[in-house]
Length: 410
Image (tube, rainbow, N blue to C red; front, side, top):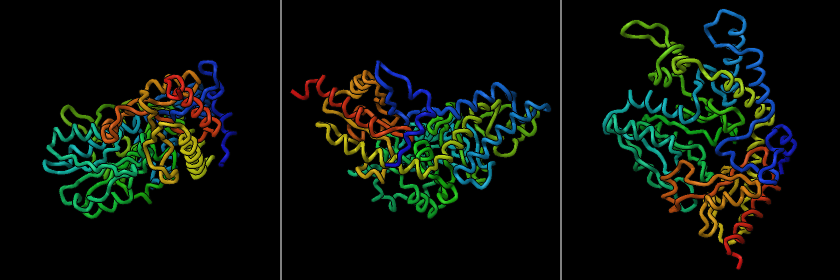
């Protein structure tokens, strides 16, 4: 195993107890815990540099601006963007996807155009396109999943034609851990001149990501899913795509000039960052990138594959348990959704919580996928660099306890 257990010392919250048991945090697909390096960076900014950015002609503002733009440069380097100016800070992946749907979609899509999605998408990669469809009369077309929990590409060639303008796909499912067929989608899109949007909320925190190699048009991701504070995320876009977009928020900071009846926008990326930005959050984002870079994203991915593989083997020991997702840990992420007999997912989560084990229960903001799986909800354990095999063992022990409480062992 890739032993990262020494990193747990960096996460203060992991030393606490819940309901009289050591905390076992298995909900990193929803949000990750924060290392002391990130907490200290945010605290230090507020204590020593707090000021608004870009326009202040004084020392604190200059320092805050350097910290904010320094974080942008770190995020750009993390995904191998060609320039920091290709990084737009947002509130998170959801906000970024809305930027793209409204800023690009509303201005470039016409009635009869198609946007291709998959049934495994998070609501944030479905609802904005539905809203654009109402305004523009476009058609939403979905690729389904096969019996291996992978995106079914059998009909892709017949689907892709000149009507397709955008393909928007998750890089990794937050429910099944399925890896999105991004490269195949890029090839298909290029054949008809369409754009590709990648929802990287579950991909970027867990795998090395190179946007130049990926060759999509947009990539979005959230800071809080990769050790950073909440309220900060990034939208990467090819420069020509960002120039084509209209801003979706207007106000201060995003303008070059304002008259009574019209305005001119500031250059990218400021064009998309109206108002006072999340400065401290960006500083924390930069610190999180520093932390992950020091660990090494290949190491993060290796650890996740190993612990997910161990979890799949241990969960197979629990009678009446169904895991939804690819069986090969090398071909999936660390979000492992499951059901146990006819016990409701919320009951499973409640029982596990009594053991200090924190898992997610519900539809995971992926109702179309839940309907495809023919389940109302699942429980989900999701792993990150601070999780251990001992915690997987605790999860399995808790599931056996749930079976006993519901009389399944009698």
